[in-house]
Image (cartoon, rainbow, N blue to C red; front, side, top):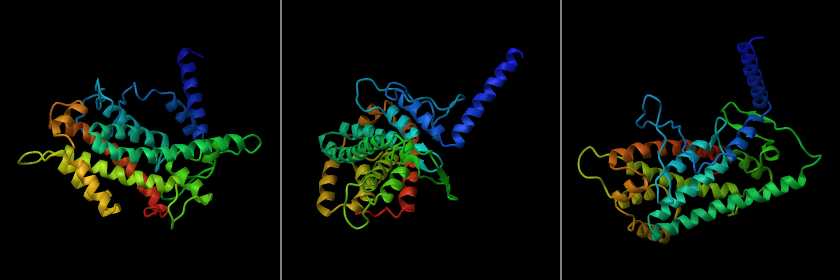
Length: 308
């Protein structure tokens, strides 16, 4: 067999191996292990399914902004890594996206930073639950090991009944929902610290930030650009305000008065003008929408959009 024949045989074997992994539910596990070894902080994500400016070789990776904590390039990397299967969201990159969004909120000043503390408490709850579940999983391993059995419904969702034993109960949004429902952790009438209730709060906050960034990216047909403070207040009033008491709404809207002017957002997004800002934020918003829609679908299918 010649060199070309050997190369073709090697490729065929590799494809067969990957097909077997996919068939038995192992491909995502190995791929996730590879992602964990990838330093997302120091490398930019070269991909995007945005409608932003695209060159002959595809969209350009967002550059790192020196001298600041928040990095829009890192945020986009995590958002793009979160979608999995046909309608699921991986919790590790999802929570990492929130870590970067918290830095974004903190950068807007101490008043807005107070809001980010509430977000951090929510991500900490899910991470703590994931840690406990992983410790329990390791303790129960041994002879009680079963293969993963993924079953896809007609709607395209993946109900990974064995995911908790293979990748952890809190591997993804759907695996978390499945495990917590089966363990009776979710309460539809009283407040609990379940992961499902917690992610619903993060989900609502993500809609607010998505709408704010969307408005910030808009270029008016005529007239001057509106202040970021007004845009953030509008985004809040049409999203999170619907779930807050009058007192909380007043306090939050007061915090928004301290939001910096538009030039500040040019700087932290590493752009020079509104057109460049629109290009960057369009990519971020599109990636955010994908994550939001998948989470919305998972919660809605399980009747969890109004958990107390």
